[in-house]
Length: 404
Image (cartoon, rainbow, N blue to C red; front, top):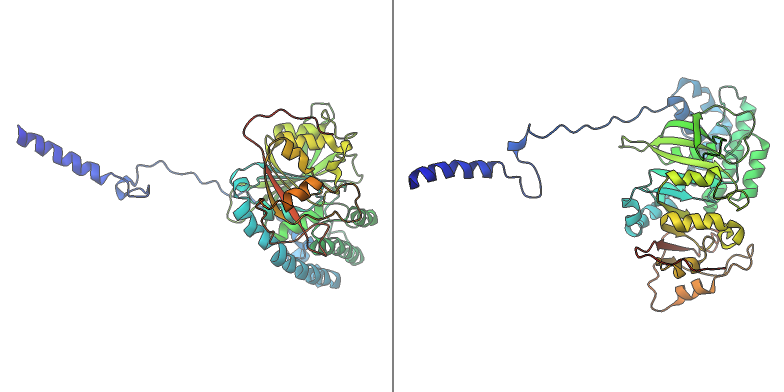
């Protein structure tokens, strides 16, 4: 009987060892053919016409034959050389250090695939994709119009020259300072060659190495439901009434699922951005999010921007901002976890009554662990004194205090 038992046991043990996975969770050769096939989605097709237009407006050569003659324009060559040099310097001095810093200090944000809300940033997609590579949706907002893409097919050489001169001035100014000046942008848009934020976003998108899948116009349905209607991109003869927007679907190298960058032309002051407004209700379908603000003109300090401030505090898991955004006291009183970076100093003379003595005290606290910033941007770009605050929503519930 014992012999029969051993004869039965030995094959069972041998079979068990043969099917055991290798150390580290790998699959042994005995498992080949038994696992279900993994379906890998194919990348979406690139919209070649839109992608070529974005690329050429970004100062990058395009293989399409229709662009061949335009590559010889002196205006385009000058624009490509000027912005190419400025982009390379900005990428080296700012974007690459941002990406390294984000991997170390924003890892928790970028592991969570939340949407990124970037109000008051205008068309600054460059900073967004450098700091938040995990964002699948990026929502940019500004007063500036959406505009149209340049119609190179119908444009004269003179028109192209004026277009690239204006776009070059806008982009070069940003790459020098790290932020846009609203009045400068409005002056350019008024001249009518660069009509709005769309080609500026396209410049950053293509310089970042991404490809365009689709572009859609966005408009509220007008029925009070809060829904936004997407329609295929077409040139607009007349500028719509704010708020309205655009959505660009793009693909990152090596990925199969497209991401989206939105731009809304809008006013975020309370009188326009009410809790019942279509733009406010857009966020209802967005879920939780990360918010980023820099060079925000200290608008979130004031009571007439309290609605968007409340939205950020209620819906954000994380907030990354400089001192021009939500005052420090709003996070401190709500027990958010706070980390400080860089240096805090008196705001530039263009803005008054916005100095935060409590934030200054937090930076100067000898027990505070303030880390340096390896890059520079913002209103003090000449002196290179920058600050960032990273706030993480507390897990414990809290009673919202009354803060005036």
